[in-house]
Length: 347
Image 1 (cartoon, rainbow, N blue to C red):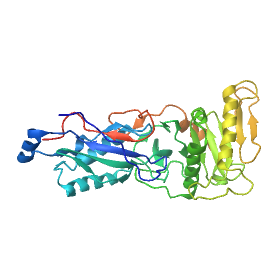
Image 2: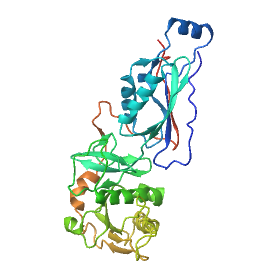
Image 3: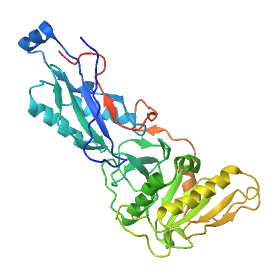
Image 4: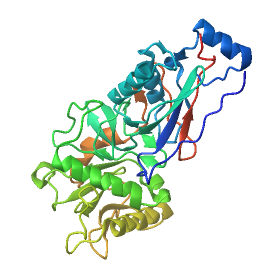
């Protein structure tokens, strides 16, 4: 009996950064010689799909997904490696999981194992449903795994997409359909793509508010970023990543240059000293307008319901709706591997 060996995930074409490919394997143990022959003769070759587990997940992957995947496969029971129909049915059942985007056909490792590629949806933002915060991927799909506050994912907190009703009953598997939420998601994608990692880590939690001006008493239309510390950034028009709008609207900077203004303001804040603390930042044009706090502890008249959102933005985040809470995985970005847990997967 040899050691478990999980192959590297294959990639077809260029996959967007929020949709890497994971490799899954169930009970991948090899049986050789007489053991394999006798197992085949006795009809004992069975794959225990419920033993599937991640071997190495990307840093943004939620460990709760591993449990949900194993539970879903376990419902298919043990299957014979030659029963392609049963294997395909088991893999098709994974599409019921909100975080699974694509599943490739299984490759059988005789006599009692298999591996297959699964494309997971990467969280890029979150929405609030009551006291819970659910992650959302770049296509607007609400993902499984509730949190008590916007969570830290890899190199930054998931931006909160402020809804017009301020806490709709979102659930895993839902798709965002409101235009203002898609505009907010557009800004969230530009946050991950265009703000440098160091500044993402400095920024803290952020809410993206694209509600109409009358609902937030904002001084101007467009996107408003609400930050911790009672700070606000007037971002202007959405980047147009989702709608593939090029060039940006006349008179406003491209989103990458807007985020450069934000990065410079964060560096100023991080440096400290006199005139470092600011309350408002307008990044729409070539020269950023910044409002400084002149007195220690001075509270600005923050627009956009920022004070109401502070309770959701501040504090730690804990997994919710889970029996055994696990923190997010950490490690290198890239393909993940999954192998059998303790046992050959053969009976």
